[in-house]
Length: 338
Ligand SMILES: [Zn+2]
Image (cartoon, rainbow, N blue to C red):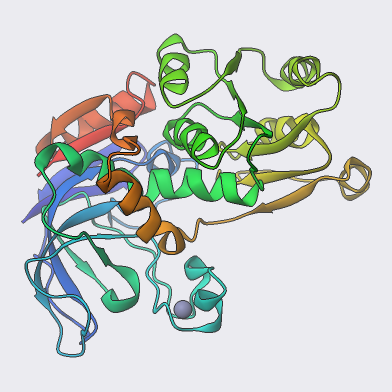
């Protein structure tokens, strides 16, 4: 089997790897229907997060179950399933509170930029669709696995409420699907912060009512202007830099909430400054498993089409070109066909 392996900065190779097999009795083996590249894959690709050893890449996945371990009860061969980048037993206290990405049995997935994948703890990790999906639905179901699930968590963590105003900081794929999530959760006004015309267009398709092109202090000033000087009820932070985090906090009204899902890189918060903002902060690795049943249902019933976020499709063996396209921001998100 051939899959994507990252050796170091900008050195991604499509090379022969051992085919995954059942290791634990709670595992399953999936034949993947599609794979993709995540914005977070760019951190090690760009050398910002170190790569200690050659690392199989990819953590977003959906596909057909080929084989299950002896202890697996709810998942069976032939089903089409979707899982999160964080595995979970879905029974421990953290899982029961809805924080499956802090499960005591959590493992972070990797190796999904490949035709076949091993998934641990499948009874608590995977969710099956009602039947096999039509081919055109697969990009949207793949999006549920991480990029939509993460944008959705940003909106939930930012306490998006019907009739209220949400701001989305970040026009990457997660931010764009944060726009979709905020609208689905009933926000009346969704302000997307983006300076790229193609991304602004997609933000509008996903339900953005306003676009702000300024960033930093100028962006905050513009949000204040648009909210009669008050600030937004909810702000989704979908980048993870110092600038984006401060932009999010300062765009929020006193008593409002920031949901942050961009993996922080070098972000430092000043306690005293934070104290006087009166802003709630909640975030972290998205507990996508909590949302999977509802999000699958919304896609299955045609109520949303998050797969539109994929603007470039490549055969899996061109994965290196996919990374380049996302690194250079020529593509918002790349779908890979095994
Ligand atoms: Zn758990």
